[in-house]
Amino acid sequence: MRKLAAGNWKMNGLKADGTALAKEVVARAAGAPLSCDILICPPATLLDRVAAILAGSAVALGAQNCHTQQKGAHTGEIGAAMLKDLGCSYVILGHSERRAEQGESDALVRAKALAARAAGLVPIVCVGETLTERDGGKTLDVLARQLQGSIPEGLAGGELVIAYEPVWAIGTGRTPTTAQVAEVHAHIRKGLAGQVRDAAAARILYGGSVKPSNAKELMSVPDVNGALIGGASLIAADFWSIAEACS
Image (cartoon, rainbow, N blue to C red; front, side):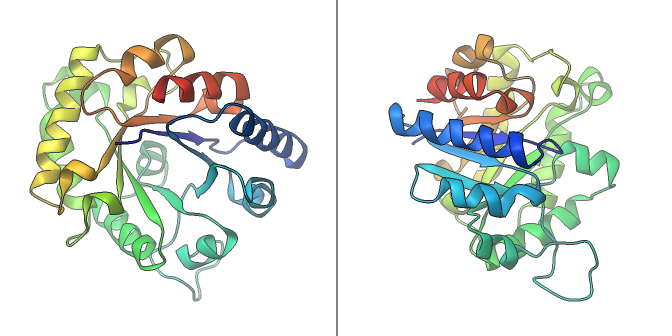
């Protein structure tokens, strides 16, 4: 299966630097096509501008969140149909930062994933454990609960992406060992088999301090089908180096 290199810009980027970054990624994609899929997920304020830059390129556009409803009296929210209308094909849901800062539950993530699918978007459903849960030997139980609660029924493997992001590794420079990543991704794959059709077709990304220096090793782990890239996606050269590791 083709791997996916997904850049999550988070709450970063004004018009000038966001435009420059998107243009550089597109230029790299045109100059050196890769055998993996490329996705960038800018903040909502840049989606329309970046969509115009990506048009006709090999780089896909994604959003960082959506509402459970497509439209209505939900001030400050964005519906999945609106994202689709802007040119998005993916949406990140249940990122650990939203689970922690906005208190998003598995049930809410599941409802958002349903809305995303209804609008024709591929949800990237994020799961991951905290350091306390890791040290307490609860990692696999936590992930099983999150998968069970966050993934809608009736989906096929190709209709969603799972991103494993150990919370304790995000932005800290720390990463799990390859053995730990292999154990978790195998566990996720096994769990998906009981929840979605054709689970083998679902891409499972690794996210959590992915850098050019560790990308090749991480991408060689079984059942790691790409990367969800945070800080490194804000530097085109670093993002592209990680994407090359996904090819």
